[in-house]
Length: 235
Image (tube, rainbow, N blue to C red):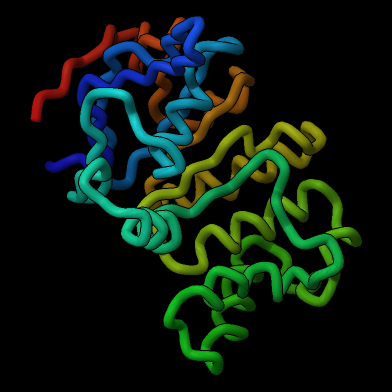
């Protein structure tokens, strides 16, 4: 089976002119459709840099990144924007919701930048808010919702265009532990329904909800899955 994500010998070097910082060092792995993968590592391990590359928000210094069959390095700015809008659903630690806007309208935002007909936007947003258990909170502004509820809105927004993959960056970092468990139950249910999920977390108990864990240290993969060392992927 062709991986939906294929990272081959990817390195990322930040050059300030005075010093070079190697954030990622010859990283290779593949993620199949329907996998639920957690990426772990200490501060400075390269996991945030990797997430930015996987989200088409940054480009590697060397190596290849193929997302759902498209070689990302060959795409122009417009194509990258389309990739980010249609193929990737982002869930961030900070929620990134409009504070004085209703949950319903927050979820509808991606559809305003896509070709979704106006008459379909409200029913779709309602469907996904109900899916994450917020059917009775649709008219509440995000400032009227708890942290866990705001993250549910963010998940509904990430799903609204039926992306190929959900990228979650520390999705439980800003919510109480009891709410974090509820959020992870939503991710597990989504994965059981066939969604591909890639999650960055520094919390071992959160990572354990994934079916596969990739450990990064000093920009390298030191463990992948159940204690297996890095598997080299060739294109």
